[in-house]
Image 1 (tube, rainbow, N blue to C red):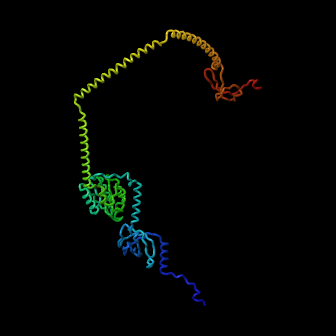
Image 2: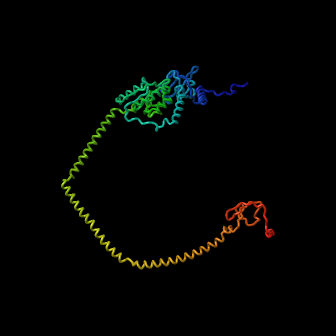
Image 3: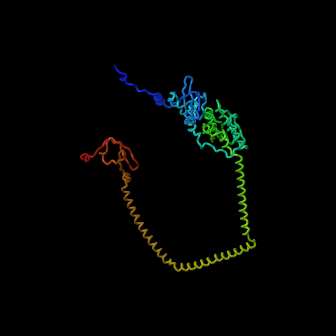
Length: 453
């Protein structure tokens, strides 16, 4: 009979070991994934961690989002919010509860909206709608400011209070339009087009307060973007909070982090204008005083240099007499010197001139003798040339042809010298004194002496 100790005993796991093993198994087999559901039992602990339940119509799961991750969420979840979480499936070992460790959270549908936002942004980037070279500078002094927003928006009250405080002299024109809800994008684009067509503002503000991506979605519309591009007025976009970016922000000529900042960017406080004006007036007064002092000093300097007109005329007469005397001396002395030098050179020239009469007589004699020799040589060469021409004429082939002879050529133009080079029947050309003729040779008769050869 086997004893109790003869059987092998399996390993025994503690509850902690079991839960830890299950937790590792879940984390290995379920990587990070997006899970959608509705928030329930939301609790924000004093440590900053978020605890809540994520559920749908038929199931639920516990979830935790630690403070290091929760601080990057762009909204505060509330009961009943539909969300999408990026989470790791795990097990809370102390209680043995299956839960989700949330890494990121967003409102349900935000992923699809963000993808649509990226697609439209890339499309408009490729078309050059975001290029800085296309954007226009803001006017230095805006007299009229247009605002495209909802009359009920809190952002409008912030803008009006900011403008009233900074620049109460500026005229404000409101182009009312819904900034949220169905059809609001088309109405925003229409309001921008109306402001551009009227062209009654120096700068246009496109504003809306903060909100979720769904609330700001009207400003991610292509029609709004193209209306901003076509607008003839420089546009400042102040949509949402500082961390909110929309397509309108990229297309506008300038982006402001908030609607209040947009109002500040397009105006300079009246106090600053007045201060600058007073400073410029003071600078101008000082410059004018310096200029007057300089001119007064120059006037005193000239006054000290002014002489009596009679003294000035006497001085000029003395200078004129001196100049006249110097001019006479300068003109007569060189002329006398030049005349004496010319006389001296003429005498030397006459002394150096040769006797040209004898040389002319010798030249005439040499010319006569050279002409006689040239005539004699020319006559002799002419006679020799005529003799050579006569001999050449006797050897001219044309003369031979004129005596009744002919030249026989084949079709290639070669001279036929022997009957043996003729292949009857063959056409030959006969060159005569007055022209040429074509003949057909049908037979050849050769001399007997040539045949024996």
